[in-house]
Length: 325
Image (cartoon, rainbow, N blue to C red; front, side, top):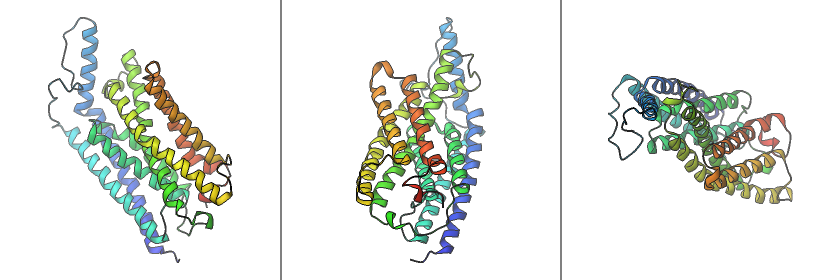
């Protein structure tokens, strides 16, 4: 079918606008993190806990649901944080529009090359984070999630950009909808626990020694909150990612005559699967909970990022036709 260049151009414009909006949302979120009530309350709780350890008075902990609720957010940083969250929703809608327009322009699933794949993965990450901030009081951490998203979208829109075009015959299959969409959802959600685990390490390092990260650590949520976010997001992503890997093997057998060929992208995806399986196992094992499990999750996060972008830039394999054109 003929490519609709007009819709493709509109998709590119929406994508560029989305990046700009995410950058603005990132800045507003960082302002709330630095000056907002949640950061101040967390800092005060950490300071009071230190005093309690030294024989000082006990205070109420706002992270404990049994305790009285913290005062409502009324300050300017909180209003700015809400603006950032609203911009995040707007950016997600614009990014979804860019994806839909790309699909309409090429008359197929809009994830047939690495540029389109990266656009869809980062969209899933943002949607997953919007769900997280509805469930947990961590809106002020949005900037830390948006930082890798913006970086990945910049790389995706420059180094990995691909003009709208039909896919090669090997990708003209219904498996493009099943296998790739599962990989997109799994990979996109995996970015959330990766960021949460990184922040968990900062928080636990501060808890062990308040002299470390004294300006940053106390403004983070309690370590157990970050740990729950990482675990629950991984629990959601892992079975979807597993399904995607299995579907990829079935598609490979139909397209190439074998279920597995140790192609670079296949291999790194398998390594990521093993790492996340190890994380879930370690998280369920009492002796490996906490920092050790978080480190494993961060390794999985790094492998996922590497597989998402850099494998297509530095290696050649059977998946290369879906990469940089």
